[in-house]
Image 1 (cartoon, rainbow, N blue to C red):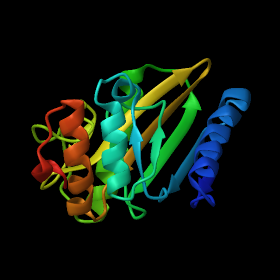
Image 2: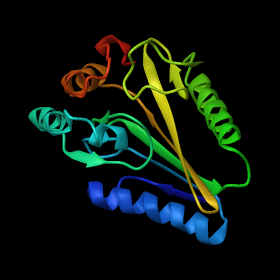
Image 3: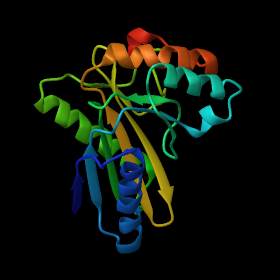
Image 4: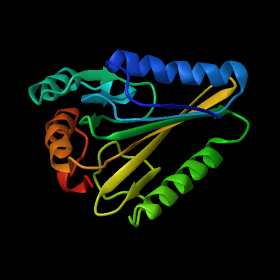
Length: 188
């Protein structure tokens, strides 16, 4: 397995590093994993970019000093503060989406368990980037997304380590203008 760790020099280089990781797996079939703390940013999903309030949402991110990016994996907006942990696991698409989600969720739960955190499947109501592949412990603390292209799959996720109040503060006005339910207290 190929292992890539650490943050690149800027947001674009970070995105390129993950794309290269995925393309390497697609070409060679060698699984790869990357763990890093992304630069401060709000990453909008494709659904966000099609909403009427998207321009206002980008302004809300900028008002909180968060650069804006658009991502191919995942649903709704997520905020990275610079201490938020991200991970991406690229692997051959030999099995189904459900199996990959189950494996990634189990691995995350085990990691949290080793840290003394009782991470449970699911998320509180009106969480950021709502989805069925999340973990919670006093709020949402992790979310997973997946993309399959050709012969490879990328399972990526976010883990909140701190800065819950800052994340809630930037996402609250963003979700409001996108007309997506959001409870700031749902951020773990």
